[in-house]
Length: 316
Image 1: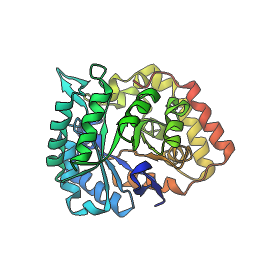
Image 2: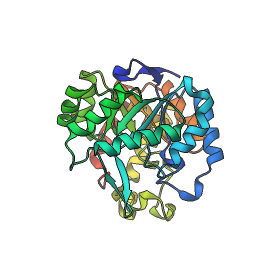
Image 3: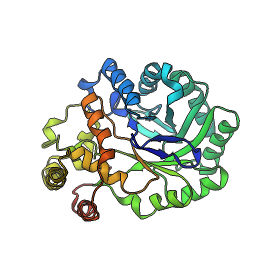
Image 4: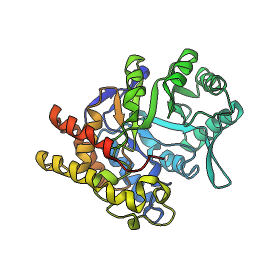
């Protein structure tokens, strides 16, 4: 596995990480299996996948517990990342950036993960009702207290990143980046490069869509978060098959899978970018990791990069 420097943390991680959300939350409830997910986590470490990403809201709480149990004996080999600042209220996921909540959330995450210090703790969303300086300042105090090593933030704007960075270094920024979600390239990804922050790309496979696995919206079961996402409505799924076909055509030229091509494109955005595809199955994990061996030509990168202009449906 190739390795990449994780921003100002100074840590090196596998060029491809692992997003663990789907093991416990959001996607395909009937397909969740803690025993199989544990096997995936162990195999990931064997393959050199060392950035493991979770969050307290995934479950809620059960994903951190799963990751904590599965990786307890492998702790020194990993960079363990979690997130705080989102809560479920009345069936809705909403931000909570109050300092008292973030302090309590950190203590609870430490217990669930079974660690004394979290390598990378990320503010999951900026709370519009709480000044960012208060939320970020509280997290910086947790670094001073030794409960967190490094701070990251998810789905933040360039002005928000700049403001937070003045208070305490922003080591990583996590946002969606894929062939069909490229808006972060305009400002946030360059900001990261300029300010020695790694960009952690979640949903690099378009929540599974870019692999060609989803051809109709009927394939999504009740309880799958994607049933309410604009890009997974029936008309959008049908219209967006043109993206799947385009990726498949490039994949055929490289004798690779569509997933590998989609990941290779994200990896090629910059050395400071680390995609974290999620999976609950070992064969998919192994397929994803092989993307690090694919070097797309400039022409193919350009062809793939133009796909975002034709996407039907917003990402949220």
